Image (cartoon, rainbow, N blue to C red; front, side, top):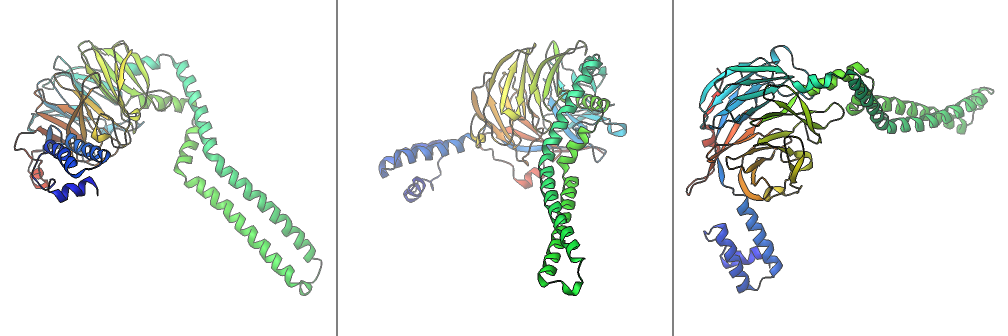
Length: 481
C-alpha cells in the first residue's frame, strides 16, 4: 500500500495541519506503519516541493493599462527607486522591421504602488525598452532611438542609438558580413530544398521510363489495326497511360508543396536578396532594443547582431556617446533578451540556455548559474521552453527571476536559491515578462502581455489568501480615455 493511502487510512491527511507539520506526521506515520524508506522520502520530497511553491507573495490585484490606439498596448515597465511604476504603451515589438508613421510613437504611463495613474507623457518614437537610472531619470529606447527623461516627463536628451552609428562607419566590413549572411542563407535554402529535389528526381526517372514504354507500345500497336489488339495489349496501354498521368500529377503536387511550404519560401526569399537588401535588414534588426540597463556610470543596450540570430550587449556613456560592444554570442528565444544592472555589474537572463550570467562593465564574465529542468518550477533550476525570461533586483541586491509561466524566484547574486516569491496567473509561452519589486519588498509586479496589465503580488500575511476571479475584476484598472 502506498504512503498516501496509508496516511489517508490513518487520518493524517484529513487533519488540518500545515505542510511543515505534515512532514513530521509523515515520519511518525512511517514508523508506526513500517513504510518503506524510499517511499517515505518520495512523499516528503513532494510535500516539500508543494511547500516551496507556496511562495512569499500572493496575487492581490492588477493594473490594467490600455492605449488610445487599439494596436498600442502595455509592452513593458520598470520601477524607479521610489517605487513608482513606469509603463510603456506602444505598438508590439517587431522582429526585424522599422516602425514608421503613427506606429512610431509611444506613451509613458506613471502609476503609484497601488496602480493609481499619476501622470503620462508622449514619446516621438516606438519605445521597446525602459529602465530607471540610479539618479532617478528614466531611459527609454527603441526603433533606433534612445532618450532620457526626468521622472516627471521632461525630455533631457535624445539621440540615435550610438551602436548603430558605430557599426555603419565600416561600410566595407558591413558588406562582407552581408555577403557571408547570403552564403549562409543559400546553404540553408539548398539543404531544406534537398528532399523536394530528390523526390522530384526519383519521380522524373520513373516518368521517363513509363513514357519510353508508352512510346514503344504505341509504335508497335500503330502498325496493326486496332481490332487485332489483344486484351493484354489494351490493358497494358491503359495501365501505362494511367501511370504517366499519376506521375505527372505527383510532380505537380511536389512543386505545389514547395510553393506552399512557408519555411522553404522564407529561405528562398532570403537567398535571393541583394547585398544592399541584406545590409538594410541587418541594420533594421539592430534598431530593435531588447533591453536597456543603467548604472551610475554607463548605459547598456541589448540588441540583435548583424549576422545570425544571437544578441550582443553594447556599452555607452550617459551622454549616449562612445558605443562599445562588450558581449556577444548570447542566445534568446522569440526575440527576448533581458539585462539589468546591479551597481557596476550587468546581469543577463539568457533564456535559451536557462541561465543567468554576470559580467563586469567591460564584458568580462564573472559568473553564471542555472540549469534546465522539466519540472523547474519547484526549485533552483528553470523549467519551460526557455527561462528565465526577465530579472530584477531587490534593494538588498537579491536577484528576482521571472519565467514565462508566471513563476518568480529569488536568488543571491552568486546564484544561491532562496525560494519562490510567487506565481502570477497568466498564459504561458515565450515572451517578455518584465518583473519589478517595490523598495520595501512588499509588492512584486509581473507583466502580462496578453492581458496588457501588470499583476500585483503582495507579501503574505497570517490571514492573506489569493484573490478570487471575482475579486480580481474589482482590482484597480487604469485605462486611457
